[in-house]
Image 1 (cartoon, rainbow, N blue to C red):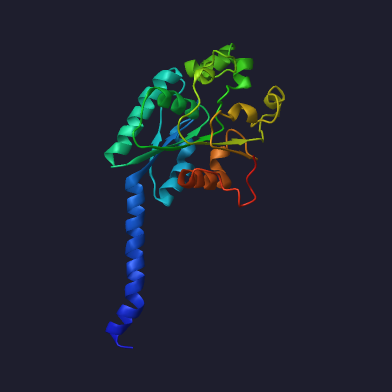
Image 2 (image 1 turned 180 degrees about the vertical axis):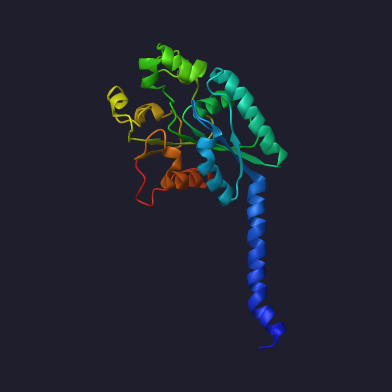
Amino acid sequence: MPMKKFFFTRLAPLLIVFIFSLQSGAAIEASECVVLLHGLARTERSLLTLERHLRNIGFHVVNVGYPSRKENIQTLALSAIKNACNQCSNVGAVKIHFVTHSMGGILVRYYLEHNDIPHLGRVVMLSPPNQGSEAVDIFKDTQIFKWLNGPAGQQLGTDDTSLPKTLAAPRYEVGIITGDWTINPILSLLIPGKDDGKVSVESAKLEGMKDFLVVPEAHTFIMYDDEVLRQVTFFLQYGKFDRESGQANN
C-alpha cells in the first residue's frame, strides 16, 4: 500500500481521534471545577485519592486544606470556600461542584446559605453529620474532645441549637453517601441505629437531598472506596447515583 494512502486510511483517523480526546479533556477541565473539603481533624491529604480520581476524569480540582481545629464552622467556611472559588475562577471554570467529607459538608451548607455562587454545580457529601453526631453529644464536654476537635467540634451535636440543625434545606442538587460499617464498635453501641462509627445513617440524611446511598464503609475510610469514587463521579455528571450496577443501597 502506498505511504500516502496508508496515512489517510489508517493513521489519519487515529490521529484525529487522539487530538479530539485531548481537546475534550481540556474542555472539561476548563469548564468544571470540583472543590474538595476534608473533615474535622483531618487534612487535604485525606482526599488525595479522590483528587487524583477526579483529575483523571478531566475535572479541575481544588483540594482545600483548612485549620479545622482552630476556628468555628462559620469562620472556616467563609475563608476556605471563598479561597477555593477564587482558584476555580482563576482557571476559567464556568461550573463549580463540591465534594465533601464529614464536617466539610456542613461548611458548604453554611456557606451556600449565606453566599451565592453564580456557577454552582452539584454537591456530594460523604458521611456528613447533617443532623449532628451523637458521638459529639456524648463527648463534647470532655477536655480531650475539646482539645482534639476545637470550637467546630462543639457545634456538631444533635440538639436543636447545633449548627447543622439551624441550617435550611438546600436549594441546590445534593447527593449523600454514608456508611453502615464501623471500626469503633464501642462508640457504635452508643449511636442509635446503623452508623459508620461516628455518624448514624439517619443523621447523614438531609431534607431536600436529591439522592442518598449507603455503602459498607466506615467514616474514616469512605473516601478511599472504589465504588464510592465511581458514585461520586456519576452524581457530578448526572445528578443521581448509579442504581444499575446492583451495588447501590438506599
